[in-house]
Image (cartoon, rainbow, N blue to C red; front, side):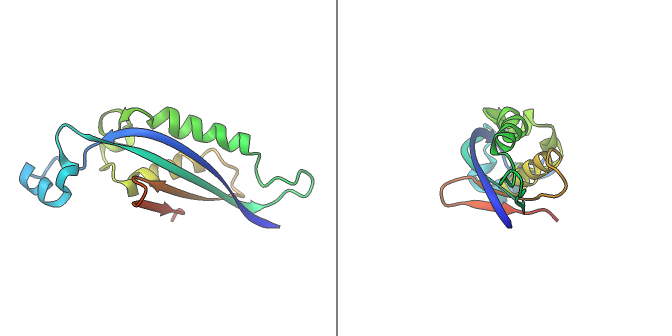
Length: 136
């Protein structure tokens, strides 16, 4: 039996959307309020979906305690209450958009999962704005 198991998580973080090689005016034109030099924050909601075959012996796809611990270590402890631009190394070279945050989360979690699993990251920046990343 093939299915997807989900685990929800939450973290708060600040960021600024801007390109260092652009003027303040150009950053404001492209990113609007999100380019505020004093940063701004979000209450991010995360859904992590793991897809694969259920183990016929255990009835588990994945022990959700294991997935909970991976999310805690690789996302919550890593990003919660952080300034993403200044405290998360991946964003030294990447603008911390929701798209890029989902990509970073995907790669951090994927590295901790068995290869047999497919992974889906759904990241809500607001209740109405979210992105989904499935790799590739």
